[in-house]
Image (cartoon, rainbow, N blue to C red; front, side):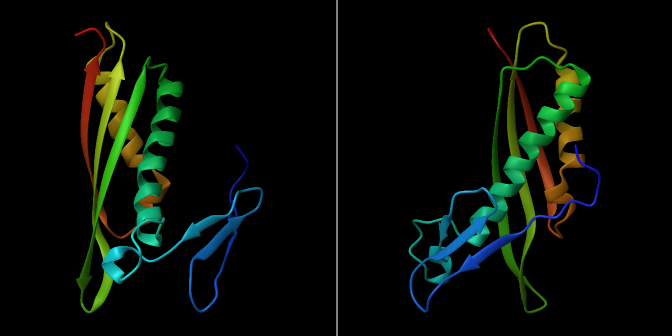
Length: 146
């Protein structure tokens, strides 16, 4: 890992109509539009969906790091995140994120250790740590073959 601070730069460009093109160094362009809730087409990534996706992605990447550091054996992880956008004091903002994660581990894996790794991943996720909305983890561990 590189020393801190890290700098991430993206660009976004658009005309008066149509998609916004989001790009970053060495990354493919991403077409975005407003979600249907804001009058958009609803069939493209939106800033809101990208933010919620970042919470899910960060949780899994944080879990991978914890599992590696603690030598936790695991087969697969799935993460679904729901983000609640609301109006608070006349300002639109995400007020909470519900993270539902299911971890599949091999038979014989310590379930408490697996759950602790998931909880630690939630605690260290830099995305949720950077947001105002509260994150709530609902962790489930499944033992393979049972």
